[in-house]
Image (cartoon, rainbow, N blue to C red; front, side, top):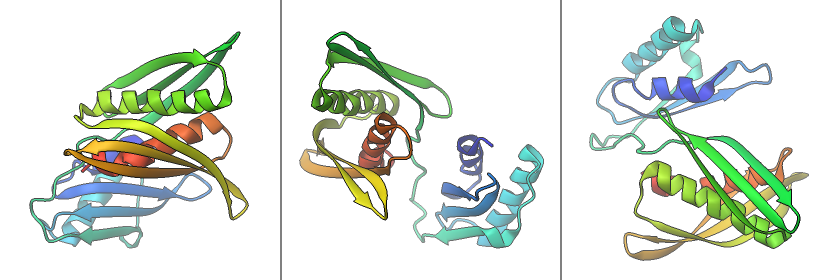
Length: 204
């Protein structure tokens, strides 16, 4: 199931601002969370969601699984930039490390490569830097982001990666932090934590 594609199609429904689908262990839709700008009724939106899922994906969904939060602001806009991580690769060439990150939105794939000395700390920096470059290119944003710090912590017996970014946003210096639970790949977790750190900035 391509959740990214389904979420993007549901976000095309009139008055839907953002969508998040939660699946269960069998990769079936468990919940659908919607934010709307209050230009249409919640029941109308729910019926449209059911129609799109049934007609386009042959997925029947109970309306009770659809949660709609309506914000009474008709100027609320859809996210400008929604990215999905396509892949992360890391190659070691002697004392040099080469890292490649690719992401896509609904239209294009964006990919960048960076290389540098193969030390643990420098690889972390390169992972963040190449991720930021890819995000800025994909979202065509005017912000300036730089890597500041990265930490690994243990929460509920799971390793969590924390990435701290410094940014100049609308002329103001801001510190941003993102996190990601590390399941298998440390490199993937770092990239996802970086994306999480600036997600609220590039999508607003």
